[in-house]
Length: 293
Image (cartoon, rainbow, N blue to C red; front, top):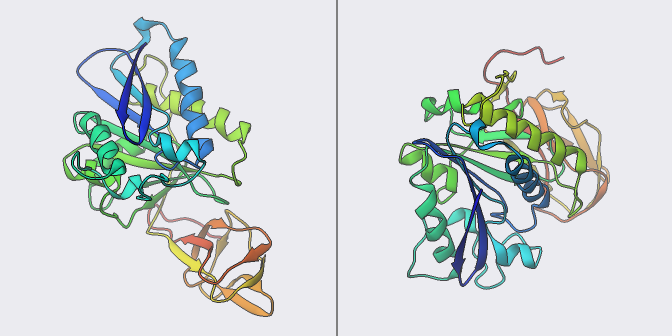
């Protein structure tokens, strides 16, 4: 294992490097500093890899657990230095503010790898993969070797690390994990770190027995935001399927109905909400065809 650092006005990001060979994968987390389950997952993966014999590696594995050190320090999504979202400014700019400069330093590493897995969290959600499998069909084989089972098509926001990587031919995706506030979920962290270890076997960066994941394909998420403030009470279950027009929940006496049929990828629990807040996301099934009931 080799250890290096990215140093910019945004802070210091630690880099862990394992293995050797012509192929390289970058696994990164903590682009948003308050997404702690993703950071803990990559840190656990570093521990596993540090105990792996050097003869078991078949390629280079680079891991950056805390990509946004300033935001992580203050437990915020973005840095308090300039307020920019690190995952909206790639490939960065070494001549601009701190977040842009840090993005440029990460991009120096990212632009030369073959694969990128970018871990994030999505609140009260089911784990899912986010990529552009329709626009970049060549990424499909790569993401089918990754957990979890839900494969969601992204809208492809400019400046996201994985989107900018796909544009230059790197196979890249986001993995979204559940996150309840700032709590660490040991079950999620343990399960996902071990599944990522298995994925490194699947894509032949580690020697071992390959396994297959049973993915379900979905289109872009249909997001449901609150039209008014109040107490939201969910009536549908996370991970279940709803038809268009079916009840998701209510804000007081106001019924919140599904704008699209599909799988409920995220839905908040009963809580006070403010108008405009995200309350649920539905993923319309695409391929393969599924039984919805």
